[in-house]
Picture: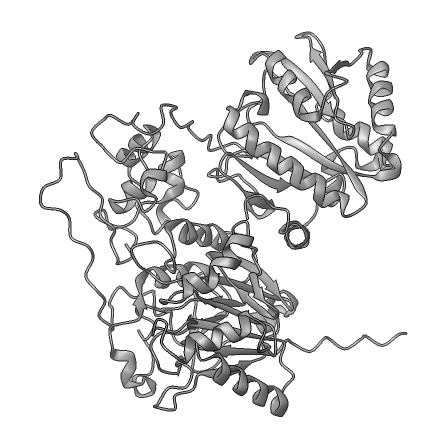
Length: 605
């Protein structure tokens, strides 16, 4: 009997606090530690990465040396603190060359990655979540409400987060801690963020790492509500601080995905209750913005910095799921406010940020109204479609398989198929509840085109062409345009096999714009379609579209497109998606694998 191979050694990670632009000093220390106790796989930097001193000598020059190639970053380094007077200038080139942000960071020079916004990525098996920037009025260097909402959505997905990176400390982190081990600097009210406290209580990471307070503090592990594992908080001092506080720290965590149940449940003897379970705050925080004395709107919801506990009826931030859909799967357990009046305003095109905080940071770029007076047609005359709470594809529905989502745009999102025909079987789904992609507005069609082009390029890199198809029934509730990759050698057979399958069912396809481009064919298809008609169409690799208008008396197989391609790929046993179900863990891994390859093409990045 062969011996069981030894488990791989856990990754070795260095953590660092505010660099303040002193990269020569930071990386000199990293090289020393790496030589003496390494090798280490990565360095994660939290707190202000760039200098707070503007264009003064020293720190800004340090960063420029690395960005301009005069110095080398010794190990892969990831940073979140993208603020400071010099940050916009030094990051502008990287920002211009990136279509948003890749989950694993934008590489601004060899081995140096900017974790922009918020997201989750996998680093040597570790699940890493981050919130870049700091709290503030908005703009460069400040995280946005969208960044926060994205993390709240991630918190609801299955799987344990290993590391959570933030710049500022969570309000109340020392609640229930051993006071004798709390440094005096921790009592300084600056550098605490109540939003971070809310997020960490929801995300429940195994490690939470933060900077900004200029002090090293390793809190006792604490027990999370409704989670088996404990969380360890580590606060780090700034690089080169005069007090000789520890600014670099090494950890070697085993990824939760490979840990045994017993190890996950292990609780050290010094564990405490969660510091975020008690309403009392042992550390003062800034007061919430005051409500304007004279507000002409009927109601003004201010942004409350204190998290609202279950049962509190007044104040608190709105639940996005409830506000956008009228329901919330968490029910009474939800920590955010369920307000029927807010639902009504949201349905009349009032901006969610305005409802939630009393202001919107997007300004004139926002397409929704910033008034509760009743005139909500200022920005967008089209009313929002109400989300169907029981629909599998509505993002705010309790039934949505959110862990399968791979990209979210303005009008469309992409997800891997449930029970996929092949591992990279993708669905392109309208964000709004709409029965057909052919009924979506023109601006949405432009975005759909970008997604289709991205998938074509992604699959071409794998030696495959792409087949798109959609079935639209009078009973269709939420549209989904399917994309299935087919190996290049089989591309020429796609047209023939669909015609043969149609003949077996007793109908013939009409060909839409056979001599034109794929874009022109799609435009022609949209112009021909009627909202009440049932149809099936397939967009072939060569650009033309095969269309079948389905009679009301015709029994058309709902899985026709999949069944035909299953035959082409010699996968007849996979024609029914119910035979191809995967476990949630397998689906999550499938999504992670797809995202890693697709990120360079993703138009939403």
